[in-house]
Image 1: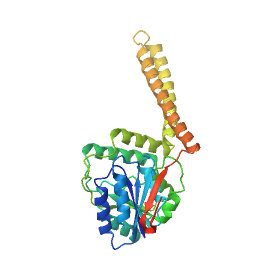
Image 2: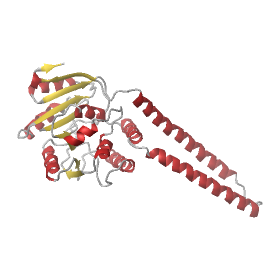
Image 3: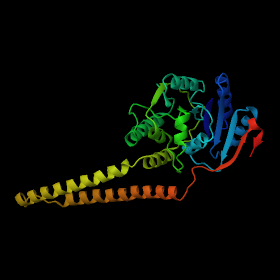
Image 4: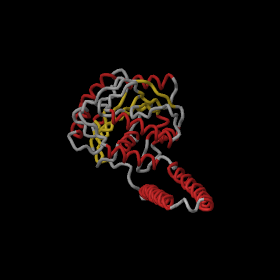
Length: 310
């Protein structure tokens, strides 16, 4: 059996089309669809409930507020029963028929996870550049193959899903959790369509916030880089002192060192404030995790295959 998770956020214009296309594409495969409504502000909740009534293999989970895409996916993963789980966005940029390609590739190569890759992404130039930068930075923070593109469209085996959902913290990063469990991962080129809706839900502010959260929660390397930077400044400071002593001894009448003092002071102060902010972010995330900050909160669920609604 195949489980398909669709995190839903403000997608009333695309959700029904996506699900109907999905059902046609997978009519020969036993599957379930889990719609996780992540606090949508439009009519996505009503649309999801209608689809749940129309199709007996669809589950609807409504969260109490917007927790973020990764939290919504984690909620879906905790409610899957399939031998493989496919994750697909609600914006219709990934054709549902491509799920079969990813699934067959995972089975043929005995892979735990198969990521979708794209020869051409139908995003704006800004979004493509941001995506490349994000993947480059994440490659420095987690242990993954550098050539592998971390797409949100992927297929995961049931065994890996069981390990991923053991994480109960409030800041899940699905890809980091995957690579903490397995390295048996591959990719497969698939089609990528233009966005059906006019606007992406990811604004610049949300993308920056997402990157900061994921980079801090998924890795301690920023602290290690900060530690090494501190040592670099110590070495540079010692070198600067020796340089000043030599210059002042031999060229005292020609040289004034005030500008070096001010530059060094500004750099050190900037590093100190950066360090305080970074450590503060780590402490804040630890505090929220230890205080039991919820990963997600379910408001209601509905599924017609048991003729039951809560």
